[in-house]
Amino acid sequence: MVTIRVYNPTYQTMIQSTRSHRFDFVSLGESMLRLSVPTGRRLDDTRSLDLEFAGAESNVSVALARLGWRTAWVSRLPDHALAQSLLRALRADGVDISAVKTVPGERIGTYFIEYATPPRATQVIYDRANSAAAHMTSADIDWDYLLDTRVLHLTGITAALSDTCYSLLIEAMERAHSGGVIVSFDVNFRAKLWTASSAGEKLRPLIAEADLLLCKAADAAALFGCQGEAPQLMAELQTLTRAQAIYCTFGEHGAALLSGNEFMTQPAIPVQIVDRIGSGDAFAAGVIDACLSSSTPALRDSLRHGVALAAIALSQFGDRVLTSRSELNAILASEQSDISR
Image (cartoon, rainbow, N blue to C red; front, side):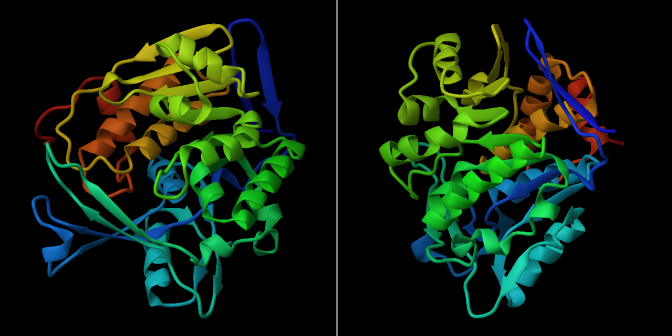
């Protein structure tokens, strides 16, 4: 019997399954091809691009698989060589992709990155409209497979892709709650996919049903009107959700957690930044890693794991967090050094 407990200081909530699960963690969403130019080069003047694979939900699945958890990713992809290359990479990282539906004659989402240093901002160009994933419906999902897990992870990015994807998330949450599966939800607002006002309106019903809620502080303010310093901002966010644990990130200022009336913060780990993209997904993976690691997870541990894994993500190139349990443990124990011999 698998038991996951999420605590707050005044009472204990236990979400209990009476059977073992095939997976510890399953995510649902879109993955894309990522094409980038070296820092200092312009997209309109480049003749070569570095290819990586990216997707908020699959990024979290990869990070947790690298830490030893049984993970899966569910989506819809075209039946061609580029999609097969993406699936091969996820499979190599330890993620089960056997329930991904492939369809002929459709396209895979792509995005392009022009890295920059101050005063210029890094630019992202999406080419993902009408992708195979954006056409996902309930009929594309093997529901027994999706819900054969301890935790189901969803994000606001999928909600922004199409009306059918939005409806799919609503159904996934309802089915997960009926099956006693913990729902982790990351707001993950993308201004190039929809406006803050539209996102705020559409995401309110989704954050209301999350068990674990993750949100950038800036998104809490822009989408849901939460104001003030971290304790007040998160208290206002708490009124909008059933979540037992709410996590907010504050960039270089670290992260904070609110569970019941208990509020705590964790400073960011100093890091030489190589690539910012994917650090939020790494934070989510760290939080979930700590929750999966013990039947009585300490709230402080979930924050520490999130901040540590985000630091690892910032120190490497690409969206996926390619790490290990020993590396994470070394950073948590402050044993890292310049050279590992």
